[in-house]
Each structure stands twice: as C-alpha cells, then as structure tokens.
Length: 400
Image (cartoon, rainbow, N blue to C red; front, side):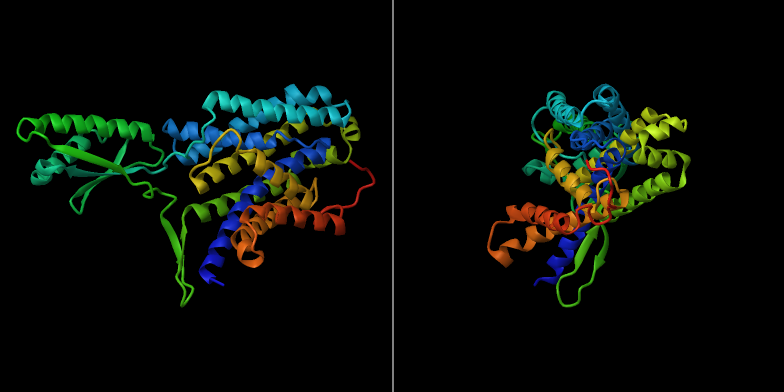
C-alpha cells in the first residue's frame, strides 16, 4: 500500500467529513425541535457557495465574505421557516415534509435562473498574472517592454484592483493582487495597461506583442502550509486551505456546542426540543427559538458551502446541494438524529468511509469507485440495525 496516498486520502477524508458535519448539524437541530427533516437544507448549502462567489467576485475580502454569506443564509433560513414551515406547525408531518421537498426544488430552480445551469469555479482569492514578451520583435525589446509595463502597472497600484507586488522573474513580469481582488477587474486592468504600453511602443517597435497568463496555483490558500516527511516514500504536501477548513470547522462546532449547552438561548432550544407546549407555558417564544434554530443551521450550511468551494475550486452549481444534503442527512441519522455531537461524528465517519472506499475499492474488490456511496450508506444501515438511535442517540418514548 502506498503510504503517501493513504495519508493524502486521510487528509481528504477528514476535510470532507468536516464539511458534511457542518451540513448535518442543521438537519439535526431542526429535527430536534420540530421533528422535521428539512430537505431544503442542501440548497441552503448551495446558496451559501453562490453568495460567497458573488461577494468575493465583487471585491470583498474572503475573511469578510465568509461571515457575510453565513448571515445571508441565516436570513434565508428564517425566511424559509416563516413562509413555508411556520403555517404548518400543527399540520401532519407529511405536509411539512412535502413542503420541504417543494422548497428544495424552488431554491434549485431559483439558483438556475439567477446563475444559469453551468457550474462555476470558486473565484481566485489571491490572483497573480505572469506577463512575458511575445513575437520576434518583442524578444528583441523585451527588457524595455517589461520596464514600460511595470511602470504602467505601478501607476495603477492605488486604484482597483489593488496591486500588491510587481517583480521580475526569469524574463517575465509577475503581478500579484491583494486578497479578495475581483479577478474580472484584475483582467480588465491588465488589458488597459497592455493597450497603453503597446500604444507607447508601437511607433518605435511595430509588431510588439504581450502575453498574460494567470497563475492559477498562486493563491493564498493553495500555498504549502507544511510537508509531512514519510521517510522513504514521497512526502505529502498540505496546502493552507486544508488546516484552514479544519480550524474553521472545529471553531464553529465549539461555538455551537457552547451556545447550546452554556447559554440561556441554548437552554430554551433544549426545552423546545423536549416539549414545545410546556416550553411555551414557561414563557419561551417557541417560534422565535425555531427561527433561531433555522438561522444557526443555515449559517453552518453556508460555511460548509464556502469551504467546499475553497477546497474543490470548482463545481459550484444549482444541483450541488442534493448529494451532500442526502449524505449529511445520513450522517445526522448515523450519529443520532437530534444530537449535535452525533451529527459531527456521523459527518466525519461518512466522509472517511466515502473517501477511503473511493481510493481503494477498485484495488480491494475490483469494482468501480463510483460505488463508494454504497459503502457509506451500508455503514449507516449496519449501525441503525445494531443501534437504532444512532451512535450517540438516546432512546425516546416518542417515535417520529
């Protein structure tokens, strides 16, 4: 067995498991209070990724775009609860379940209308461009051309798109932009600068050409954070986005656990989960607590959507929420539906099973890696057969 491949797969598994855990928390919190499987939750995750694309593409720094997207999705979650679920509080559960499926389809089609059916890449967080002379005449006057280009870009340094550094590297000019720069604005500035430089040089050197090439890997989160030395086998390079996703997931989970267990609002949420009618008699505004639950779960899903976009760098589309949503629901059931810690554990377990089986299922069993989801759900079925309440769930006298 290739040790470096195994370590890489474990890193990928833990990262994906953390993303699933963030989504699963929203499922389990909503179910814990109103006994509703919110099948629109995967679409909230999808909307969070699209909000992140819009905000970062508009020039907002990533570390501000992340909480802003979470707030927008929290508001969307409250809106969904108010419009679709609150009128059905006393209705049979089947009515709310059908409504949840309807909301899911509505959000999918809304996203398709707003952002088209094509998948989008996650925007560059730290775009850089390499500029080189092109053509025979340009090679002859390359140094002069690069000097003119550097001066022209330096003149634009204070305006958009916020150039960070301009430096020479091996006969080319490397231009780096600041974190959160709008890539479209960066490209426009490069084109404007190119026209200005060519206009200045055209009279003296006809036929001068300039090429620009985006440095697709020269981003902040794609730079190596550390390298794992595995002895005789090749080392494993871990990029910054991986520890960032881990740290963000752990921090959000700790904040949620603190909120639920240590605050007055958390006690009210737990009281509503036990008995909404009794909680209302005790003076708790049940609808407000439910709206807060939707807001928190939706914010966590938005964070998961942005973490997915950051990790994959692509695949942002109107259908992206369905499959992770189903897996996250399975993770919530695996850990014990209604149990926040169980949702976290279930997400990590299913992430690990899915990634490891994808990597090794062909070698071990000789079947396609596309059957990895069957292994993940097989684990779920096995656990439910042995422990119907899930890994961390508790038996209850009331059945869903």
